[in-house]
Image (cartoon, rainbow over all chains, first blue to last red; front, top):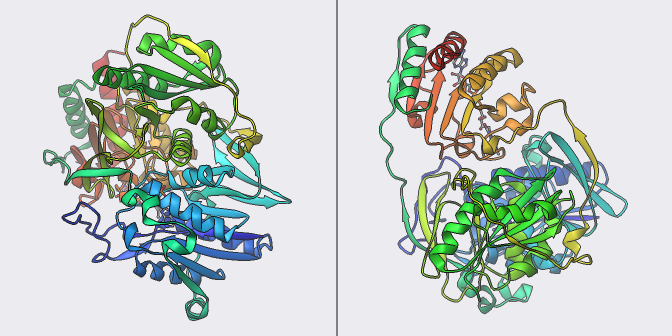
Length: 260
Length: 325
Ligand SMILES: Cc1cc2nc3c(=O)[nH]c(=O)nc-3n(C[C@H](O)[C@H](O)[C@H](O)COP(=O)(O)OP(=O)(O)OC[C@H]3O[C@@H](n4cnc5c(N)ncnc54)[C@H](O)[C@@H]3O)c2cc1C
Ligand SMILES: Nc1ncnc2c1ncn2[C@@H]1O[C@H](COP(=O)(O)O)[C@@H](O)[C@H]1O
């Protein structure tokens, strides 16, 4: 049983981000991390490996060359090998192009489960897992609070309106998991050392059977402007007053805005 | 190609979700701008019987994708056939809505936008406004010149207001079913209801949210009373849900619900970035926190520094008094 975990390198949640003049994100000058939600997917895959349900855990990322750092960090947490798809044609890739590239790479790797995070921190579309499943003509189990594997099928636990469902689909498939799978493990010093010797392959588009033409310039969308959000009026503060007065001031504020 | 604007209309237990009514209004407005029709894609338990009534919200037609309670993703292959050649598909920015939207993008090789805070048509050019990078940048975007349609657009709850008092009935058709597609293979094998009423936090127009500072389930009862007085619902931070004080269904944020109420009142919540991205589009934000330096104080409209246990019950009384109940 083989799992490939798809991980994205993203600007650190707290980093200052900026757009380049061509309205693509500057991904070179900011501090980067593994997309925090992908760490849960890594944790889920490693737990399945710990339990003997999985024999091989590999990682796949599409991104600039420096995304190999994210893959090394993942390898330091555990797992066996990693693959980076990098190509000049991919800068500014949207979720469709990302899915197209990951789908082609996954076709080549042919895992039983392609496992993803529930969303990338910098895009928040949550579209890549479903798009990859649709492109690869595989079932999708998304937003799992837990992923389990049993003879030929996978099951996820997924929140519904009042509780949760167990949803099942036959392997091979694409799955995504949430931050409810459990806290991601830290890389140990031994893990960090071991990661340096684990295989990391770099592929270009032609290695996965795609050409730049297949990708419509990397995006089916075009950003026409990128601006900081409109400045909000400054915060009104209520401080150093007894609770009664605080309550009255809130009620007045709400009433003035017709909220009560 | 047509200028038709499709929208996902999810039915649960015989009734359309509020998102369906909101998106119906949005699709009707876009269809009018673009000179096409608004078309509902109705799915879920009760969709067949309820689809025609979506006409009251301005939908000329409704296509029934299927009438069963099964995972939303299983309806994606039928939806993909139904929307071919259209101008846009509006999907709610919920897990179910995103699953179908994602599959449409993958199946039809079409552009995706969102979650948008605004979407409009200039002639037949779709323009979307969305916040990215944790809300630090707002972008305007449109389909690339050579992109095929329809554009798939994720829409946050409370972006459009349902049409009130409309009449009219949509022309209903049944989509041909697709059964051999791998995306239809996901099935619910068990369903567990926890002891709680269903709340659709995304649909609430007033939310009283509590965090770690609320201290436990008893504290949440106080928030519950305040929410009741305000006619709203209770939400929570992940810390409060992780502690088991409230179910995860109430979690707001990056990995919880993304809400857009007219009033968000947070008590005992610090305002971490992962929480903020779930509520920053609320129209009015009030925060009660005993720490004058809590991050939520930097983006709240009204920031009250104080002990929530002192303030919340008094605020509840004050609101009840003013409402005369
Ligand atoms: C990948 C990832 C995803 C995440 N997703 C989410 C998410 O979806 N939603 C989410 O909320 N978080 C999420 N988090 C967690 C987030 O980072 C914060 O840890 C969390 O939001 C903190 O919750 P809190 O504000 O309730 O608690 P704290 O940060 O501990 O804040 C408690 C606040 O209560 C105040 N307080 C204490 N007592 C009182 C009192 N008596 N009266 C008034 N104020 C008081 C304190 O001053 C403090 O500001 C995520 C984290 C990660 C890594
Ligand atoms: N560039 C990428 N490389 C590898 N995996 C990715 C990439 N972009 C997205 N993913 C995967 O898809 C998930 C959802 O991302 P998104 O659809 O962008 O919100 C992420 O959590 C990753 O697991």
